[in-house]
Amino acid sequence: MFSAVVQAAKHHRLPVVVHTGTPQDVKDALDNNVDGIEHGSMRDLIPDAVVKEMASKGIRYDPTLVVLDSIIRIAHHDMSIVEDPMVRQTVPTKPLAKMNNWMRNHELDPALLQIPELRNTAAVKNLVNAYRAGVPLVLGTDSGNLGTFHGSAVHREMELWQEAGIPPADILKAATSNAAGLLAADGRIGKIAKGYEASLVIVDGNPLEDIRATRRISDVFFKGERVKRSSLFEGN
Image (cartoon, rainbow, N blue to C red; front, side, top):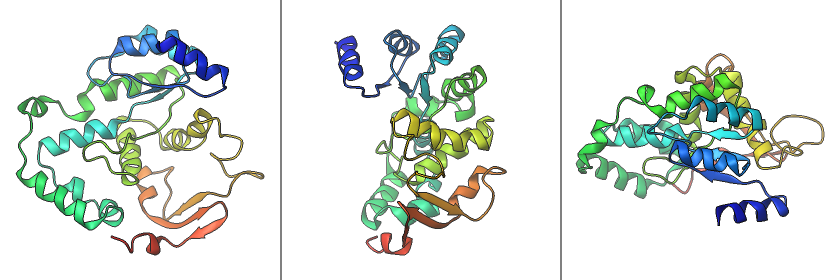
């Protein structure tokens, strides 16, 4: 069934991106020549041979570290996840207050407390190994998971990559041109160039020196039109 879906998508010239959970899932996806891998393997290391195959085939890799980071922080009642200024700006007040209250009082599966620090997980090691092998990286978040908020999660994901040792320039490339390429939309978005949609974010600071500068948003333009950010927050 999986192979049939991939073949049908390719017949219609649609990119195929597969959510995986184990190294074997990743290998099965590569055998079907998909376009992208989401999550990879968070618990187990992906074998070097599989990583090299991913690189040789140009299959994109999106580790979504922020999902695991959110789970770890929630398991330890780390309230910074809901106190993040960007989260408070973009998440409506009522659900954020509900999340805040739940985080202070919830009891999670004790097994979640056994997850090591993020930097010591297979998820981070797989990202680093993929980067070193030349696998084209794509940055995504799988927002909607517990504690993984739309918008702010992108910035958190970029910060986690930087902490893992990925250079800021490559992080930005993964979030822009590489992502556009995976969506088969790199002819209109993903970079600032003549003939492309003028959708861009202006920040205070240099994200090539510190990726956290992307949080300091000064202006937003969508298809050439300036977006009044304050109006987006009025509903909170």
